[in-house]
Length: 499
Ligand code: SF4
Ligand code: SF4
Image (cartoon, rainbow, N blue to C red; front, side):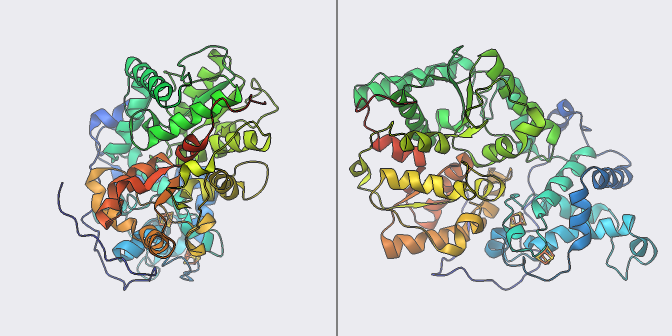
């Protein structure tokens, strides 16, 4: 692997000096016609791309009223400037949320406001030209759509929505991002982001059944395509093949087993993640999620449970009901969909699980709130459940738990640096630098409180941190899932499950 410059970690997160263009070289690989055309996007940049791009912006302004509001109401107060992890890690002015949004606002002003049409130079309105498009492609792929900036904006301006719109416009003129489009294609062709075919999926799950039998003596099943199961478990495909993700998958299976609730995985809808969001397409979000709904009907399940994946839960919680619902064919006694943490927590409340906390005594644990879960969803019946339920679960299975600095957790959490479709090797420099705020807060509790395990509920966070933390001198096995800890602590066969 190439050598990367890893930022110096200090004891506190500090606002760096502003620099111009430090990340101007960091654009993702462009999509080729074979990535674009299956989605109905032009295979390459269309001849009249400037006109088409402006027309598409006009269409989105009419379709999404929030976009027009976000472009109109910024007062340049500066409250968001130092809130983005990519700005804190790169110092690049265009990674300040207000400046990132300005890349679109300046075009909006030029074509959609009287002042911008008549006196563009006075209002800093710019043409949608080659230079502007280059900046869009670069810097709207340096935003992970994490929404941290919106928490601090007095008007709640959501830069993530502006980024989504920019990506939608670029796709419409034939300028796409290879990585995210390739992933959505794999879901349509094979059923999951990693392109795992059915025989390989079945083989892995059988192997895990043997693993659990060997290590516990209990015959815990991980069924595939089992019609009539109570629950359809929709997990991120990384849970089937990657470490440490697979440890959480074994944890989910043990919970279902111990509670006496039958479940199945689907080979057709073997993916919870939904990169439709990362290409800015609600239509693709709907199509990817529709596979899950079709399988839930075909397999005649009564409940839908989503595994540990941040943006998957964001799409499921915030969009499934409107894009793919209603879920009136499921059991109305349970939320549809339901997060695996909520599912396990509910069983804990009912006394259906016996846990041996000492099994995790080697760990001093902290929790990284996934940005998508924290700021775009809820979990359970109460406000803030998305913060409290994972923590309650961890505390139920561990004796030693420490939170990171308040300014870096719950709704103020930092993105891991690899979200929003940026978890690709050509953006490695951005991923390393974007992880700096989280690494700073993590190192602090590692040094002050002897934390040696960061628990996660996001497949992207797990993949990003296992690669990036070692570059900062933090061992890879510091990273794991919440249900990995549950898996360690659950006492199989200790008590009959209660539903
Ligand atoms: S949404 Fe997140 S990544 Fe994008 S500008 Fe805001 S803070 Fe930065
Ligand atoms: S905090 Fe909101 S209003 Fe202030 S500069 Fe940022 S986006 Fe604009």
